[in-house]
Length: 198
Image (cartoon, rainbow, N blue to C red):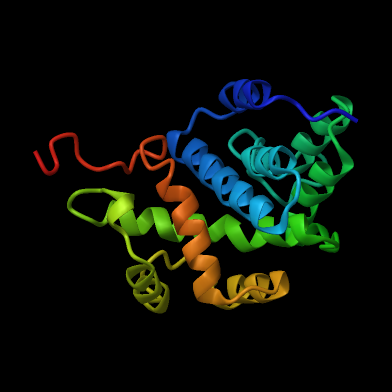
């Protein structure tokens, strides 16, 4: 079983995903999972590339009710055909909670704990006048988390359950994911307005 290189995984992402927002989401989840891999002293490339590829087929096959090609089934077939590591495949499968695949290890749990949290954090940067993620504080993300109208599609109770499953404190989790994303703010399109602070 072979893990692709990051260059190969990025090429695959660009081949399958045209949406800039979905690409940014996948990059954000990669950054968060790399941070967690370091925290747990796990394989950073395995964790990072799992995050980078977890929504690979979502743009092409968004119908999760399609039992053959719906997300993430098409991507899972591709990963198996390419001989990707079972841990990556299982985590992507387990993150689709509707498939009923149990979350068995830290990677499975970390992927779900980080997945939608990255969306909330990105949204916090988007509403800033300077669009600079590096200026976003944990306290402001917590405030937006409590505002149910903000990113209303994110199920707070479900996400809290995923974070608890991972076994980390909410504030600690928020801080770790935010810091990881701040390191790649430019790639995420939230590195601040070009002339900010000039």
